[in-house]
Structure formats: C-alpha cells, structure tokens
Image (cartoon, rainbow, N blue to C red):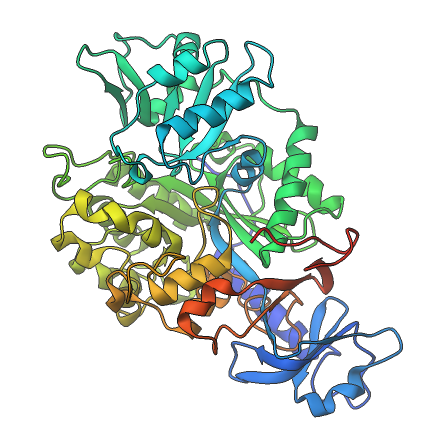
Length: 582
C-alpha cells in the first residue's frame, strides 16, 4: 500500500505542534494575571462553570477574540466588562465545554433530513405507509430513500419482506436503510434495477436473505448492500452543501461544537472545506477517510494530515476501516454462535491480515487508525493486529489507534485497550437501543462484556463518546443520560440495565468533551475551559452534576458558543439561532 508523501516525521510534527500550542496559550494576553485586561466579548456569571480542569467549578468566565480569556470568581468579573461586552446571566444554569461527538456520519445526518424518516416506527405497516406517502409526491421512476427502521421495535421482530412495500410502491425503486446502516430493504423495482434475482450471489462479507423458494426477500446485509451501488443518481454539490448547512445548524442546536466524521470520502472533505471558507461550518471536524478511499493508495496525491483550511476546522488525520457488521442485523462477528441463530457467527469484513496491513501503513505514515468492531471476535482480531503493528513504538509516537463501538468484548480483551493505548470509542445510546434484544442475540453469559464502560474504565481506558448518528439521535444529552443511568428515556428498566457498568456524572461529561478532544489530538485547545483554549461552550438549562439522575433526560441546550460566537440560542430570533429539536 502506498501513501501520500509528507515531509518530516509525523509524530515529531504533532509533538512540536502541541508544544507550540501550549506556549501560545501561556503567552496569550488572556492570561489570568493580566493587570488591565481588555474587555471581553462575552462574560458569563451567575451559575456553575464546570471547567473540567484542575480548577474544578468556578463562577465566571470571559471570552475574547474567540478564546477563553479568564475563568474565576464572579466577584472579579466586572474587570472584564466593557461597553460592548455581552453579559450572560446563567441564573443557576451550567456552563460547560462545547459537546463533541466522536463518531458521527455528517453527510448521513444531512441526507437523513431529506430522506423518509423511519426512526420510531412500531410496525412494518408504518414503514410502508411513510414510504408510500413520500412516493406519492415524486414522479414515477424517482428513487425513494429512507432510513431508520428496526424490526426489533415491532411486534413481529422477524426481518421484513419486500412484498407489501412493492405492492404499495410499484412505480418507484425504493431503498430503506436499517437504523444501524448495516442492512437495507429494497422493493421489487429496486431489485430489478440492480439486476438482483434468485440467481444473484451474495458478495463476501454480505448476506442476501431469501424465502423458502430461495428468492430474495428484499433484505441485504452489509456488503450485499453494494449490489445497489451507483444506481441512485447522486445529488448535486449545491444540494449536498445546502443539506450540510442544515445538518451543522441542527448539531449546533444540540450543543455540539466538534465532531469526528467516522468514514467519509475525499470528495466530501472538499465540501467541508467549502463550508469552512464560506463561514458556514460552525463545527470542528476530525475526519476519518474510508480505508477504500483511492487517495490513500495513490502515491502521487499529497493529502496533509493537519488543518486543511488554516482555520482549525477541518483536519484529515485518520483512516476508518470496518472489521464486522452490526449486532442488530446479526453481522457482528462473534467468537461463538448467535444464540438466536445457531450456526451463524456474523460477518468478517476485514480479517487480521487486512487490519495488520493497514495498521502498519498508518504507523509508518503517521495516520490514526479507527476500526469498526462490534462483536467479540472482531474486537479480538483488531486488538491482535494493533498489538503487532504497535510493537516497538516509542511512547512519544502516541498514535492513539481506536476501536469504534467495541460493544461486545470478551473479558480477557478488556484490559488490552489501555495496555496498548487503544481508545474504545463508544456510543452510550447504542446500549439503551440494543438492551431489549441483546440478550436474545448473545445469551446472558456474553452480556458481561456488553457495553462494558465501567470495566474499561477500571482497566485504565478513557472512552470517547458519541452518537453514531444517523444511527442514533445526535443529542449528547441523550448519551449523557444513558451513560449515567443505563436506562431509556422513560427510565426503563428501573435501576438500569447491568447498572454495574454505568459511568459517573463527571466521566459521562468527559466522555462527551475532554475524551473526544484527546481522541482527536486536540486536548491542548478543546474539551476543557481554561485561559487560552478555544471558546467553544454550551449552556445547559440545569446542572448535570447536581440534578437527580432521572432528570438528566429533561435537560436542554440553552446556548451554544462556537469560536467565541453565539451560534444557537433557545428562543432567539431567527437571525440568532433556533430552538433545539427536543
């Protein structure tokens, strides 16, 4: 495998960059001992300011020129006020670092805003009804796309077949992604367009579900979904940009100021750059290029790993690989059979040799490698490959390899994450979504290693958190509630599902702030509130460290500040923001 050639040793460049950032912060005119500070742009008082630093909780914070200028006692805040300073009375509300989502699919979130929304459907009939309603608005022959169905939420939890959908929507090809993005349902028109019939063979790493007569039922799992690649006319760049702008505003309304895009194309990166240069990107992006991206194998292409725009907004320094599928569609690779499908152990999308080859490439060229692994077999394969690739590296290298999801772990593999310096990037909402049926897939014994946050913490790991949106809702507060309680939004089950694996309140906050910053090599500028750091902030309606645990789900975002600017404010006029969708 060949890579982009970049001058200098990547790890040395990163260490020098961190040192320069630290020196810049120390030399900043925002230092707390400034005898005559220039007035702040924003001044927060009247509520707890959780810095997530050694300073703990303070009562005031000042923002100037896009950075945090001062934190301290509210009695000293007047020194930072001037005629143009906007003073924000928190009135008991909490001020925190802006939220980060360490695993999201930004274009997926953008596309979902235009597709048929199937999240929350409680029957296949509801899926058909919503899809038919959208098709009625489109000309015959136009493709209908949707996402969000989950057969586990229906009275009949078997995978659907296409018959009712094909009867209701005969004149439009339809592709409906399962909520996890690892399976889709196609109607007869879509299968005909793809040339799929009973003689079609599933590609390696995929499954075509079939009826008793071996005809496709319409459900295609993991790599079998690729049979439909290239059939749907792509949206124009202008449309993609418009959808991305809407998605960014939505994420700001959820309090998000940075995200890690978990597997995208160089083409999408160029759109992100365009948004940044137009001042429409009010998020910081840590981008993971898909492992199959041609630019990674083209020795003539020079792609920097650092800031692409010069604005600290779009960074490309990671690669995303998938080792298995998802648990809900029985694609997660397990060490033993699925309890509810004897003889089946999931799908291996990348074997040990493939992971090892890419890991060695990443080590040699200074990339961070993030590998999707859900099942216990996939996690072991990835950890084995990482261990071999990382052997002999000096501590200064600090590649921060990641495993995305790490949902089902064999107990023997839990301590290996911290020992290898590998980050388990996990999404708390997956636990609350999967808990009603995870026991059926795994059996009770394997649940010991399911969504094992506390076990990983006790073994020494930090856990960057996120949503995996559009798989889950990109709402950090839902993740916060799930991490602390291990219950759904209605408080079920009482006491929490395997409550021994809960995170503490502070851990849950770090899971969405400081730990994602570390996972993106950004801990010197993001994830905490200290003078010199970037002024990415969120104001919550209450204090997440003080309200009862069951009240965490009722918290709301009142204000989001990005780069020192208010980009969302609840109840504000249209020019100032919009209400968050809660």
